[in-house]
Length: 120
Image (cartoon, rainbow, N blue to C red; front, side):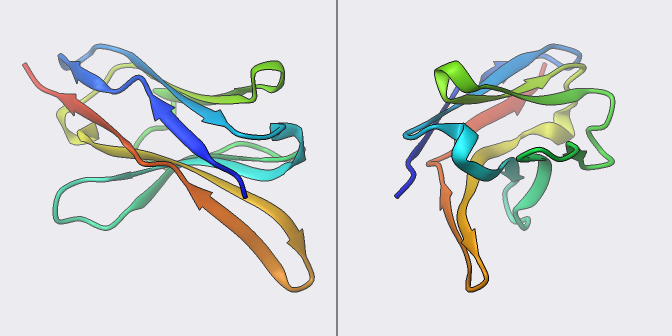
């Protein structure tokens, strides 16, 4: 089992920045894919950014150029740097790991979420 713990959320003014962290309970070099998702009230959870192992990073169109996903293998931590934040970025942000993939499928784990509120 892979456990994920997010941190770094909070209240920020429009145009501000936050960095979210996702601590992973095992070596992230063995994880097939790490990603960040968000869910605003009364909306479906949506992909923000993901980072396949050895692959290209993917971003939602709404965050391209403003958000950056990165990883620190030594700390088993994945980050989401969020710049130029907008009120529409307000949501609960979740970290996801996809792991132990085989011909039968993959396992996945979710963190508990961290709230980001962008407001003046």
